[in-house]
Amino acid sequence: MSNVTQSKQTVAVEVAGQRLRLSAHADPQHIERLAGMVNERVEAIQRAAKGAGMPTILALLALDLADELHATRRRAEEAQVRSKEEIERTRTHARQVEQSAREAIAEVLAEIDRALVVEEPEST
Image (cartoon, rainbow, N blue to C red; front, side, top):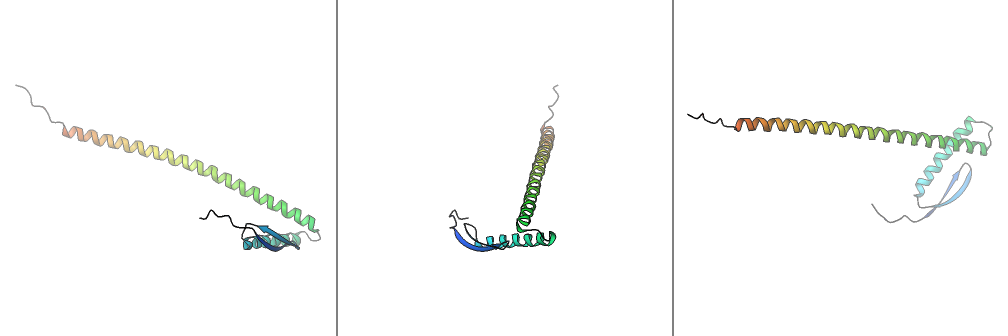
């Protein structure tokens, strides 16, 4: 992975009927895809909110995007909590397996010790 920062590039896009010239470090194709996504959402809202002006449509779009962002963050936080819980369960299980292995090894060593003990002959 390169540590070299990508230079700024200028890209022209149309968003909600407005031509924009943007200067950014991002790939121009990425910016064009984002503009396309926004335009699709604007069109969907225009169909649903017939007669609404562009300020209202953009406000609805902003609210929709904020709601999506909020839901995504909540899912990410929930996934992080689940991951931490799973890690703790895995650690607990690993400790249990380790303890069982230690006990089994101790039993085997005890059996080996018993097998190696030679009975001392009786004195006469």
